[in-house]
Picture 1 (cartoon, one colour):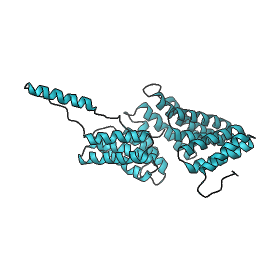
Picture 2 (tube, one colour):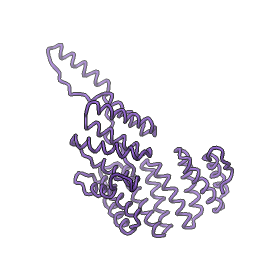
Picture 3 (spheres, one colour):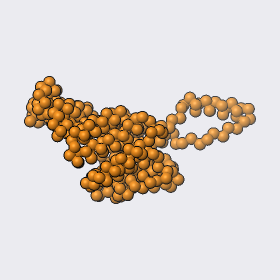
Picture 4 (cartoon, helix red, strand yellow):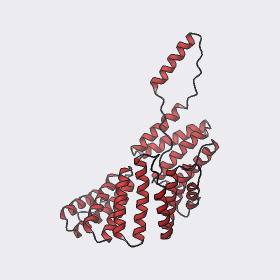
Length: 327
């Protein structure tokens, strides 16, 4: 499950603000005094809310700019909690956008500032662990060490523990420790929260576990079982709103179906993955998947699907490259 933004949207309804002003004036006219609670920096709040909307719409450049602005506004006030929240969200966006080194630095700022404000940092540590796994050996921190810290943290939510255990299993599998990964995968499934999270969040977490089970099955050479798992992962990722992960799962399912000798299923999954990737703007992976889909459709003796796949090949073809046929 990819990292999520921190905190809820914070809005100050203008109508309510205006009404408070009217009440204050009325009371002051009667000799009364009104002491209003201090309001957060309005520009900071607006930047954070606008950044969230941009992130949810997939407007990453705008989200990055606005979270950066919010962090600077909070720094001007030396507000540790707001610096930490803005830095965390900026770090998540940088991670999602593939700017891993900057994300690493910004997330550490989030951890330090939230700790200074006396706020919990388990969610930050979880993202730091995921980022460290993505970066690899050059990461400043150890992914397994931080994931273990989150899994055993007293203030970690069940959802955070589930993700940490899943991450530990992925790290085991990366290192070729298939049996250890299998045990942790089962542990993650047992930890999966049955309440306290939205159905969408639960589907997103379960997608990660099911995808892990598919990788374990593939590592053991059981491609038919892996294909079933990856198909299920794609369905759960779609339900959880993780369309990038859905496309990756469809790719894995297609290749597993192909290895299992099921050419029609392979062609179908590869075509759907290619179409989704191209629609998401990932031309490189979409183009490669479309070529594979056309080949698989030929093997499945499905000329209609092969023709549709070749249309995607042409759509995703690099500028200047002939792509009338997939070979």
